Image 1: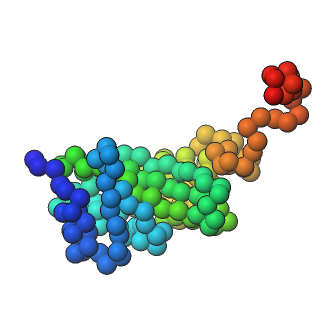
Image 2: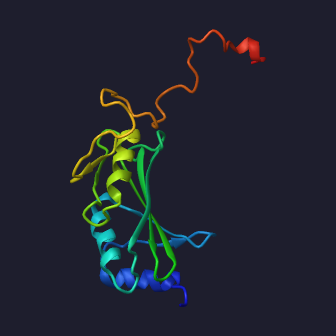
Image 3: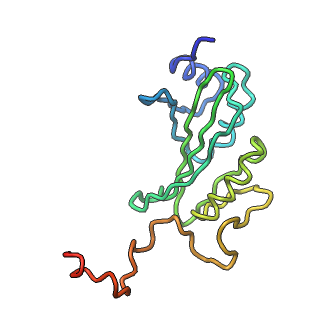
Amino acid sequence: MEPISLETIQQHIDSHLSNGIQISQDAFGVFNCELDIKHLYQFVHFLYKDEVLAINFLTDLCGVHYPDQKNKEIGVVYHLQSMKHQLRLRVKVFVSENKPEVPSLTGIYGSANWMERETYDFYGVQFLGHPNLKRILNMDEMLAFPMRKEFPLEDPNREDKIDYQFGR
């Protein structure tokens, strides 16, 4: 089967959705788009149900913390794939650190369940509508989210790592 071109994908999405979603392609052949959070569920649901694109597999879902991006500190990245067309699509959404709420995709992809729980556990993203959002790897009593870049890399109180001992 012949691969689908970027232009074909863009035209198909534009003809069915009126959100103005722009798709690009990187050097490795992966298609990319960044969405506003309010369009995420509708867009992914369209991709899943659409018979032309047939993007029917959630490969990965992960969180990212960009502390320097004002009001877009927390990112959630979805890697979607069409087995029929060997097409890969990376979808990114960003939310504020103060209100890290993203709609859950467990209603579309059942495999999103554990990936969303892991992202909640490490980044604190609240997946709205998730059936059982709780920590899976860290202790329930833990208040912080360890993958956020909020802590120094080294403990300043350690005496076995004094800078002058390392020529710093």
